[in-house]
Image (cartoon, rainbow, N blue to C red; front, top):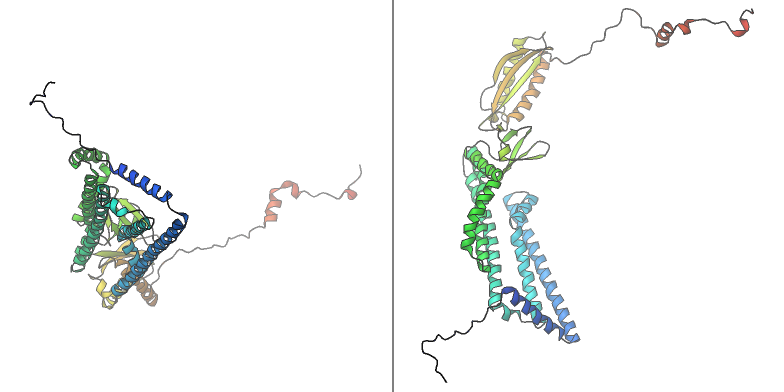
Length: 425
């Protein structure tokens, strides 16, 4: 029998292959089903009643927590003196995902209790490798979601508080316009970090994924040039203070008040409630009517028989009354400009004036001035021309329709004798 040389390598024992997460879940399911099939019918009925009680208790807990949440929202709205419906809408939108995760957590705990009732021990499986991995994945998902929502809430509150402390209204509007861009950027970074952590826990190699993501991002960047253009245009619009939330602007054929500025769109709400949404790339020309100050032009028409100098004097008197008014005076930042005779129209003389007001108050001041100038012109006997229709009577009487028809038809003009009086040939 020959001896084994000392230099011969000794084969290492084969390492046990670790089953995957899917295989461990499948094995756990098979064991649980085998255990359920071996239960006594009486024991199974009792377990069913206990399980139903656990599920009903979980649903009741969710209902109570929801009622407490609504009660807290109402108290918050009352303390802040805001509309309850608006507060509920904003809070529900901000905490929608967190509330969904809370319900999933409660239902998951109820499921574990139900499994314990049926004699299935989930805790031993959770304490193993597969269960620990699932728990870590769930914690990563919950923490990432909570961080995204908390970051959005804190950023919005910080922006609102910083804007409310600003003494310059224009600067406050600009800060509020930056809020959605800042919130979206922070939440986007947190989502990417959470996704990479989640994939790393699943066993994927994040390094090669990041390397390939650079190439994919470059390709997506070329394919999504419009999105990138919208984002960059919005950043420059806000940075240059061209438009802010609350401004009254006109873009193309649409006009209204800027209600929101998101990552890629600007939203206008007009007087009849219609919401116009424009991507920043389509808002190439923006007519801002409320930046720093606003103006209102008056085109007042008087008849040719009116005293033009007296009409201009009445316009100045009414303007001074408006500036002395305690309600409208603070809105007027400069004296009225009575520009004089603008043009000679077909039906009257057009007098032009202009008033400069604080932003967004020009229409209120303009409507009140139009009302007062109408009353003042009526008192002074200054006539405001309006279209009239003048009827001129004809020189000869108009023939009736029957007479005109008789004159035009020669057959109707002929006279025929009755048949019985015709002469016989």
